[in-house]
Amino acid sequence: MNTVPLNDLTRLCIHTITTKPWSIEEAAKNFSASGVKGITVWRDALSGRNIKRTGEMLRQHNLSVVSLCRGGFFAWREPAKRQAAIDDNRRAVDEAFELGTNLIVLVCGADPAQSLEDSRKQIQEGISLVLPLAESAGIKLAIEPLHPMYADTRSAINTLTQANTMAEALNSPWTGVAVDVYHVWWDPDLENEIKRCGRNNNLFAFHVSDWKSPTLDLLNDRGLMGEGCIPLKMIRSFVEAAGFQGFIEVEIFSNEYWKLDQSEFLKKIISAFKTYV
Ligand code: ZN
Image 1: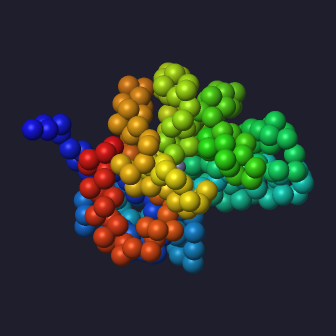
Image 2: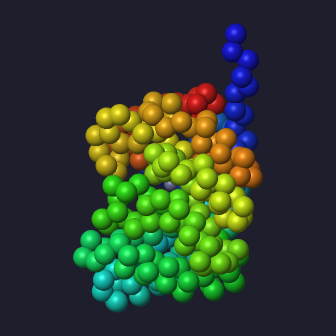
């Protein structure tokens, strides 16, 4: 008999985008009723709402607001676009503060009109310009490395090594890294880089999903945990060995799962979390 204990739900967080067809109010009600304890809020879910009251609504459902997704997109060849990105990230800090979370996840950006090195310089500069406001608001900024298939337009930070190096260069307790298994599972340096992250107190967030084989859409075909080839339990053991004890966040963009009855999908998420993470 298998006597491995199943996960309880005390560390389960779900991103609003995972159940995109639901409004944030529906997500809060359903997550809470199912015993989920954390929610990460995508900014689009706040559209047209009073952000402070929305944060209160989430806490009334006994949900911890784990982070706001997402800031970033700092890299642009045109200076006016870089400035617009910095302004937008400062707005994101204000939104995170109003919402009552202490973390923003950064998808850092890339512009195919310039080199990845130039994009990385602009990313570091952009974060450094947002950092004073983030510090004063008590909001941490997590650099999320993205899989290299997104290096053209979404992020010039593609390995945990690059994210760690940048977080260390910024040298602030308010900057760190988000480890998302979908982006980094393939990396031969993963265990060492997760250790490095932990040593420097830079491991701010842990996102899970799975890599389907074949993957049919570069953006919106992420798998439910257990249906792909990511060694989830192993990567979880790395982040926990590095000292991470925060929420485990389910972040799935999926044209397939968004078509399902989201209540059925939520049941699948909880079952997959208990069994495969
Ligand atoms: Zn993520």
